[in-house]
Image (cartoon, rainbow, N blue to C red; front, side, top):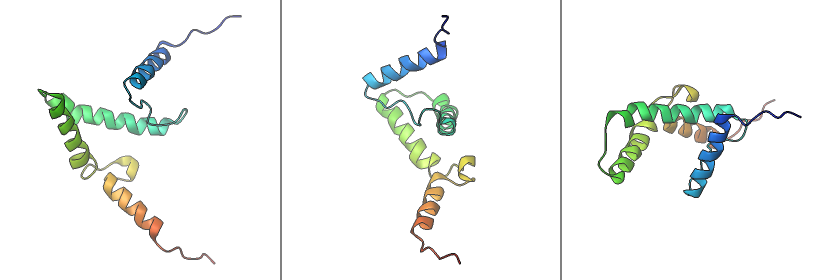
Length: 109
């Protein structure tokens, strides 16, 4: 019986996952077979790479960590609008979702 060899991308993914786990990191943002979660996560990392990481160099890891924190909390979550969130910021989307969840439900007749 012939077996299909392991795809190189899949092997790389296994290697990456194992290396991340050894470093104490959680490498996956979604579940197996859930491409939408991965697309949103990949879009986030690509945008942060373009909008922050490719534009500057930092002398220390602390400076880089602070810059990433400022990007996420100061810009990405509060001002950047997202197509996946109906062109709301994550803060606006979350606030709306919580308000709807807490609003009294009216009976449908």
